[in-house]
Length: 292
Image (cartoon, rainbow, N blue to C red; front, side):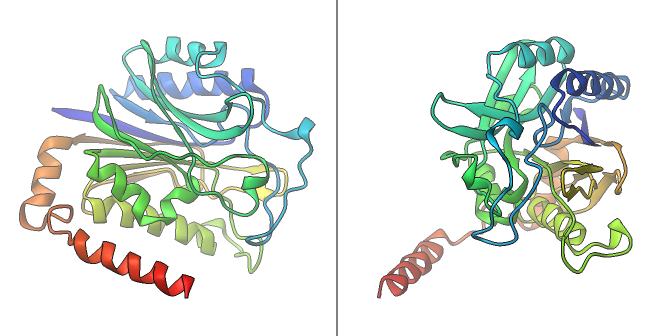
């Protein structure tokens, strides 16, 4: 059975009502093209942090008043999105709180409500000053099949996508607010080195796990950040099936997931050919060396 997949590129700021209006437009566009899964960008409800630090110990210049608004999984914003979604599965990004800590969260929503949520595990450039890190990498069942969620910097870690694939995910949606480089900037956004990294990670994660990979991303600017767009759908061979480039819009591809994955995995099945005993041994050796 063929399923339509769409990844969105767009600029989403602090105005949640405006964000929901933007989401509604994208949802309707996706439905019009027979899409079953739509991934919206990271922080598309309430916006991202406005400044990233310059290094591992970098800081943000955020104040509590300027941080993204905290939204609840069972709050009116996600209920509104669920009402829009109907039979469509929509992946959305927002700031969540457990009452003590904030989290950079993604959720998969249908007309029936929230199917699953995920809290970002890997944090770049001082993000940990404002968000706690998530602790789980789990796949879940959805109307488009078994899938997993990741957020932005997670894609730089092969282990994250691999954990989801090993948990049976055939589709992974990675939503981002991925900016251009702030040093050695390129004249054209398409030529920016961080744009290239974003695209390489997407293709590599799809290929090495032999899954359908959706990459949504912010565009335009927010605070000092300039986002690279390049929303895309990647096939299990690492091939880009559609991309928005640096502009706004939807990257859309229709894929028979079962048939496409079976074909990709027939000759070389990366998950089945793994040698986890060796990897675990190397990991143990590395940990022992770091303690010495």
